[in-house]
Length: 199
Image (cartoon, rainbow, N blue to C red; front, side, top):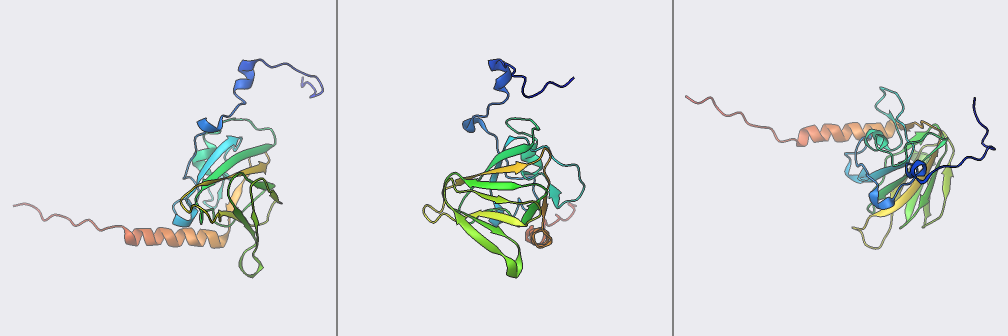
C-alpha cells in the first residue's frame, strides 16, 4: 500500500547520504553523445540527479547527458526531473538538439548563448550567471559558452530536464555535421605502411 506524501516520514543521516552530491566529488564525462568528438562541442557533462538512459538503437536519440555520464549520476533517482552541469571553454557547446520534455538552463559562471530553431528561423539570447531560460518540448536548441574574458577558462551551466527518462534527439543538420566529421577523421587517419616481408 502506498503512503501519501502527506504522511511525514523521518529519514536517517545514512538514508539521506545517497541523496547528497558534493560538487567537488562529481564525475563528469566528455563522451557518449553523437557530437562528442567535434572540436566545437568539447565539454564535460555531469549527471547530478537522474538521467536514466532511454532504450533506443537510433544514434541520434540519447540521454541528454550521453551514455557515459548517464551511467554515473551522483544521485540515482527517478522522481520527475533531472539535474546536471556542463563545463566548457568559450566557443564550445553541443550541436542543435531537442528533448521530449522541458529543459531549463541556468548559467552559474560566465556568459552562455542559448539558441533555438535552425536556419533562417534561428534566434538566440545571451545569459549571465543565474539568468534562466526554459525550453518547451520539441523545440530545437543548443547552448554555447561565449564568455569574452579568459578564453581558456571553463565556465559552468546548470540544466534541469523534466521527466524520469528524458530523451535528446540531435537534428538532421547536427547529425550531418557529425557524419562529415567522422568522414574527415577517416581521411586524417595516417595510413600504416606494411613492411616488406623479410627474406
